[in-house]
Image (cartoon, rainbow, N blue to C red; front, side):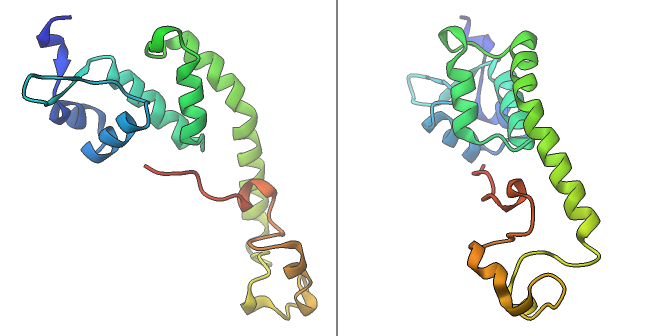
Amino acid sequence: MDATDLLTIGEVVRRSGFPASALRYYEREGLLRTTRTSGGQRRYERSVLRRLAFIRAARTIGVGLEEVREALDRLPEGRTPNRADWTRLSKAWRGRLDEQIDALKAMRDGLDSCIGCGCLSLQRCKLSNPEDWIASRGPGAQIFPPLLRRAPVDSP
């Protein structure tokens, strides 16, 4: 590979929209590979831009970094995902999106009556939570669909 085919971290930041800290984090997590100059500066292959677009798209629909890593690790020789890879993986994630859409619609439709969380401010809610019975079901918004009660996906 010719050195002109390599991008600096600043070029990748500008082209991808990811901050440098995210690039370094993804490198530590094994999601990105870099080479180093004799002075120790990172250099990225141009294909890293597609890999970062893949990561962004997956994260946007709620796929955690571990699952992103697993998907990328299944590609031959760590290659960058192509259109066929994205089609296959996005089909697998379609069910997740459908669940999220259904859960968000349920939340939207219930917002005008109750937030459904069993929080202390609604401890004596005569409609949904008399005598705080929801607390026995565990922490968080127990009336919401399970998908909306899960912990947020990891960052960056």
